[in-house]
Amino acid sequence: MNLKFFFLFLLALIIGSFFYAVIPFVFYSVAHGADFSDLTGAVVKQQENAHLLKEKTGAGNIKNNPHYSQMHQRALKSYLKFKKNQIPLYKQFRQQMYGHSEQQNLFPFTPIDKEWKHFLRSDERLYIFMSSSVPLVTWENYAQSLDKLREANAVMVLRGCIGGCQRIRPTLAFLQKIIFPHLEEVDFSRPDWQEQVKKKARHVQVWIDPLLFRYYDITEVPCVVFARKVNPYIGASEGYKGNLKNRPQYWKVCGDWRLDYVLEKLYDKSNAEVLKRMVKELRKSWWSSEAKSDYR
Image (cartoon, rainbow, N blue to C red; front, side, top):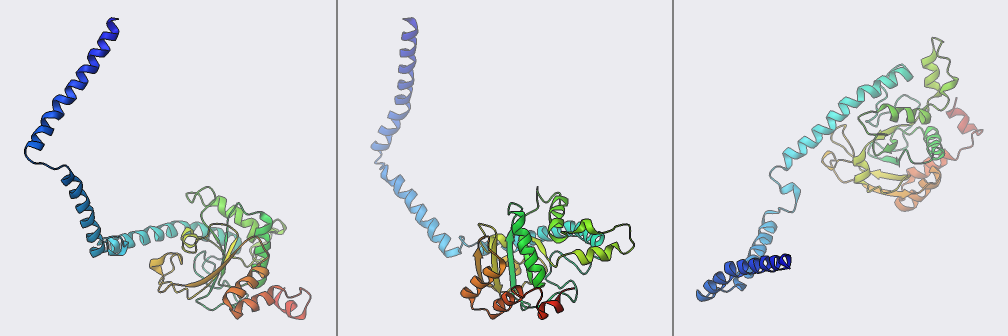
């Protein structure tokens, strides 16, 4: 009974304190002609002013931010720092596999040697967006097609490194299966083992570039993009808007299909004759006279 009385007393005390604090304020405000609707009106007015200021200054556009240029430079600096840190590891890997590293680079679209071809113009790209989750047989099919094309401006693209880019070795180990499918046949005890490795290697380029995934809005893999008017300022990511002189024109086809079929679909969308020539190259018979001259 005493406990019930205590809770009732506590409740009354709380209610009394509330009215003691609020009622004098209300009576004072009414006595002095205050209208609480003015408060709501003032808030609405400030919201309208803020909206007008945003339109006037262009605050909604990041490029109008006075710090945009500084942020732009910092983002580019971070990308180049990553590139600087990872490229030596990649070159070391290429050095071990090929015996040379300077001619084979992960980033620029430059031919490795005279065996690479040039179906595409210097401002045209064929990006094949992939993932380590894609079945190995699909990787094999695309790698075989790219090896047959030997197109210097065609490249497979990964969003990131396997297990994170703090450690690039797992990614290189995975790609070794794709680029060097018959490495076990090489006799590393022979002095010409590097030349053997070079002959076994496929003509395939693989990039790691999350910005390309974002720029071309890649939400599923495999996905193939044919792009034109790709003109980067420097050898940084071609998916970074600040590094492009103009906006590329592109078409894409997503799905786990043969590359020649995908190129046909891209031709239907873009009407680019170069894609028809690439399809013809892929469909050459291995034993045809044309094909024999292109393969060892």
